[in-house]
Image (tube, rainbow, N blue to C red; front, side, top):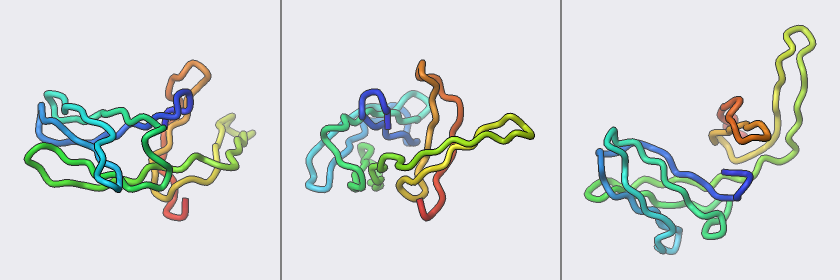
Length: 119
């Protein structure tokens, strides 16, 4: 989720240069895009068209559909500093097994991780 715009990005891998359609639980198309020449998929989904916790269906033309869950916002985020290493740890609660990206005020990614199975 892009915290500046409240939009989401669906990423993945499929056949190169293939149209990919993303649908909400009611079967309405919420986004489409085309995979890159290397097959990678990076399709923005407007945050106002989906809700956290909703299951979306992602289907490449001629391919098998997969489902993804719209992640919830991180709640109760807390930053702690390790005085021995000067490193920081960010903790909080979100959708289980979700990719998490931490960005600086300029929007640069400074860390990534995955939430635990309990969120």
